[in-house]
Every structure is written in C-alpha cells, then in structure tokens.
Image (tube, rainbow, N blue to C red):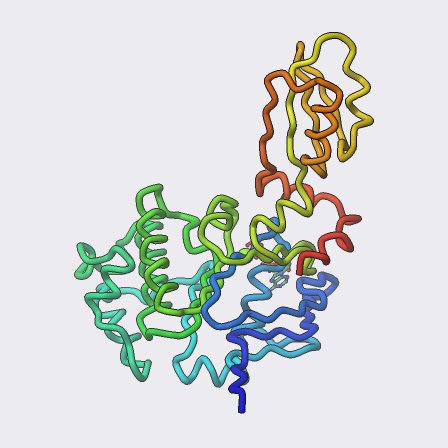
Length: 306
Ligand SMILES: Nc1ncnc2c1ncn2[C@@H]1O[C@H](COP(=O)(O)OP(=O)(O)OP(=O)(O)O)[C@@H](O)[C@H]1O
Ligand SMILES: [Mg+2]
C-alpha cells in the first residue's frame, strides 16, 4: 500500500475578517513536507493573518487549517512546529541562555543549546539579558525560540526585517542547513531577492487572496515582460507591431521592447535584419511582483502557474 503523507500545511478555503476588513479571503494552499516557501505581498495583504490562521493562533471565520494532518493546536503542542511572529516581546530580566533553556524544556526533543546559539548567531550574546539587546539581536533570539524545539515545520514572519547585511547572510546560511535536513520552512518577506534566491516556491498574497503560486521563474515568466533592446537606424515605430511586443520605448538610437514572448520577438527582429547590439534582459521578480499586485485583472492569468 502506498504511504500517502499529509502535507506539512493545508489551508482549505480559509477566511478571516476583522470588522469590515477581509484580511484573508478564501485561501487554499498545500505545502508538501520539505519545501521552503516564501510568502510575498504588500503591507496589509494578509500574510501575518494567514500565518496566524495556519498556526491555529487565530480561529478562521470559515474554512480549515491543518498541519501534518492534525489540528494546528495539536501539532504545535506536539512540538512539530516552531514559529517566529512578526512582533512580540521577550520576557524580561533573563539571559538569552536562560530563555532558550526554558523554551527548550517545553519541547519533547529540543536541539542542543550550542547548536541553536550558533544557528541564530547568538553564541557571543548567550549571557546577555534579553531586554538589553538591540532590535536585530532580539529578532535573532525570537528566531532561536522558533527553532530550539527542533520542529519539522518552521514558520517565520519577516525573519530578516531588522537584520544587517552580514546577519541576513548568516541567517540564510543557517536556514539552508535546516532546509537540507528536510525541514519545511515558510517565511514572509518584503525582500524580493530573498524570495527569489532562498525559496523553492513563492506564494503572492494581495488583499487577502492568493494571486500567484509557483517557482520564481514561473512567476516571472507569466507576469513580467522580458526587455529586448536593439540599436535601430531611422524610424522605429514598426517594432511595436512585432510578435510578443507589449510596449516600446525609444531612447536615442536604442529601442527597448517589453515582450511577453522574447523568442518570437528576437526571431522577428532577425528576419527584419534589425539585430544590431541586441540585448535580452530577463524579467525580474520585482517587475513581476509589481505587475501582480497593482493589476487585479491578472488574477485569472496567474492561476495557470499553480
Ligand atoms: N487584529 C486585527 N484587528 C483588526 N484588523 C487587523 C488585525 N490584524 C490584521 N488586521 C488587518 O488585516 C489586514 C491584513 O493584515 P496582516 O497583518 O495580515 O498583513 P501583512 O500582509 O502581514 O502586512 P505587513 O507586510 O504590513 O506585515 C490589514 O488590513 C490589517 O489592518
Ligand atoms: Mg505582517
């Protein structure tokens, strides 16, 4: 008999309103075990609310959330989930080591303290009081409390928001180690480069709805347009009629074409003998993100990438 594992995270038509605000509006999502997922969306899109729903911290108005096939609260109590909220105070008047030792004691099989301190870049701060830490240091302690229980699912709401460049890099090195051990990782971020480089899959939420779901390349391909630039002599308006071209801009003797089908555009340019100094710049995730979250009429199109 085939062993069908329940996904790490399953949301089925989950909805949550706060008064008149539909913070999460019918989100359905399955995250298989072992994936690293980036959750993107503008401020107020519903990322933190989605995270609260999947962790069982907020009751949904309708729909269901489950983790590893269980009720979220049950999965959390069994120590299978570690979470880092976007905000949240740390208890005062204890040291980093005391706090982490206490949290470790609430889990059945925690990681060794030294390993946690190393992963969260806190080794040198172990005896510092948590209420005396800088913003970025406190954030690292909150990350440490999320991983100390050695959970199978790690959920991080903007884990790198207050980190400096070096700390961000070290943070991702540590996360890479956890991901390669087969952990399922869900993180929200406003850094599109992090989503691009650090995740297997990107989910974009806007106004409470899931508007794109796929690999970084899939999202870029469906939504963003590739730029094809050529040098042209004389009149260039005819380029706008080439296959795939959605937008034409002329600067000096360079024509910049934004194309939905760059192969077809380049072939047509070659046939027309207009390929001097050809440059093709792939779409970037930022273009895709802006296109997705500023145009509601793309919703049906982006569904194709699921
Ligand atoms: N407890 C609450 N009471 C009232 N409204 C809320 C509450 N929590 C969230 N909201 C509203 O729900 C919407 C979604 O908020 P949420 O915090 O999920 O967004 P977000 O995507 O995490 O944004 P950010 O990037 O700013 O963290 C927002 O309009 C927000 O004002
Ligand atoms: Mg948030």
